[in-house]
Length: 453
Image (tube, rainbow, N blue to C red; front, side, top):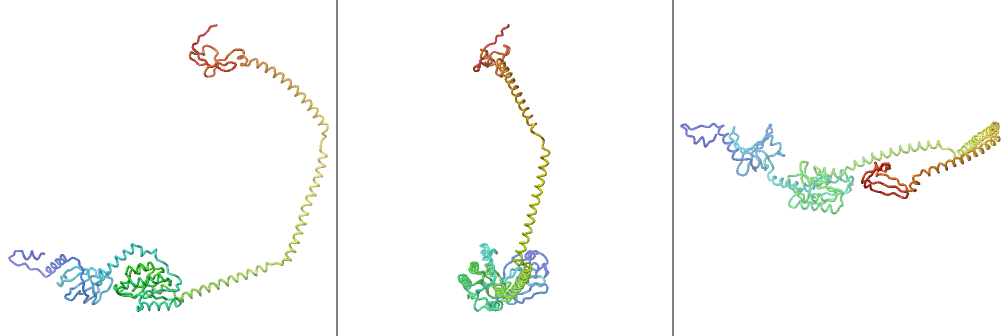
């Protein structure tokens, strides 16, 4: 409903609005004309209802306004406000119609003045992350047996007493070197970074602790300094950060090789308790003692076993001498008996062979006579064959075509090597080969004229 429209409507009777309609109209006007905005003020009359909603008054020196933050939004605030806290709220201006109270519906809340600091923290964290200063691969492992531990903190800080107490209780043998630096205030970041660089240059510690106790974000802001983060990354030894409480995070925590939730926890991470090491050493000593005793027992049993097997060298020599004589006798017997049997068998075989040998002299004479007869017959037959061969050679010579060619005749062949015997085999312009006694002549046929006999 538009009030201006209602007021301007001509009517014989003035229109009357209900209280609910009026409040709803005003609420819509406020929500339409005032978008979400940030409002700063001091918490007063804070109440946390059983439903989880927060009800409070936001005020300054000259005015106040009621505010409500519903449970769904309150659980993300990150802290529980209390009376007198300076806060900044992101809220929607509206009106609570049942009571007609103008109020703020709070969407988000932060401590006053922390918005710019937190934004600067996020921007610097994002920048250093892109440069790789917070990469897990860059983190270095802590030494197992640190001999000297360095501490960068204020000499007046309660955190220093906590760290020294923890180290004295856990590892009294470890030396401690303190590099004093203010942990809050103007220029504290630069001095902390300088103390870290001094510890890195001296290289007299095995691990370095950068710590301070808890506090607000303003108190811990020195450890969000870019120079401090770069000094931690460039430090020549592993760095443990123990700044604030478990819920506090600074850039020093991300840059350090290991983050501890508290300074005392940093001391506990840096040095294993001496009692634990002594207990471990005693356990190892017991294990070594048992192992050595077991080895000695095994060696003793081995010696006893070898002693039972050990024989006197003289007895061993006598035994081997007797064994050698026995082997020599067996060898002589083994070689003599086969030889005797072989000789006997050879003699018997010689006798049997002599008895069975045939008379060969007559057969030899007869064989020589047959050989002479055969040789004579072969010689006679060869002479006859030579004469017959000579006669055939003479007849073959008479039929030799070459002799015919030598008498002036010729042999004609065509291009295919066929002998030309009749004029019908010859055609004009045909090439023929004319073979003579001494060579061959290629001729061409001009014309063919057959002659009848």
